[in-house]
Image 1 (cartoon, rainbow, N blue to C red):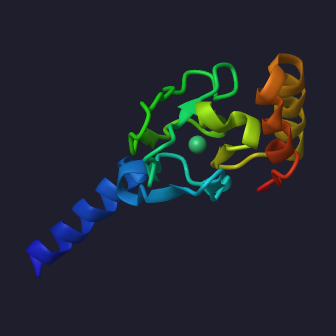
Image 2 (image 1 turned 180 degrees about the vertical axis):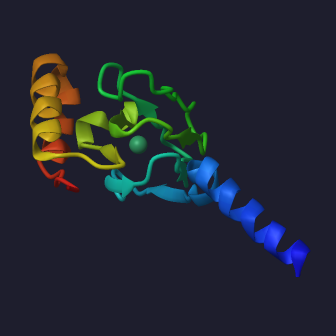
Length: 146
Ligand SMILES: [Cu+2]
């Protein structure tokens, strides 16, 4: 009985101290012919995303359009790269050979407000050039989570 109580206390403490580790989920974004599925994905802080079926594609995060201090990723062609999303906020990414087809996406990590989205959209409009502006269509579809 004593051991069981101690185990319960230990597990409760571990879950409290390590919420991201305890609850981290892995999501998959699949490369279709000329699009990511899903191209607008909502996940929790600490989750990771695995890009799959990347045979003739890549996934590269967009500089300046990931949260401050977040780790960027740059998968090579055909690489089923994994992104660890430790910082809350909005992450934009593209498939470099297919940006012009609109093969771009956004991942929303944790909670974002309407104000967060408006500020992100403004930054995107100010910085994205040429085919990268295809991202604006995805950003316009992001919904506040609180
Ligand atoms: Cu592609």
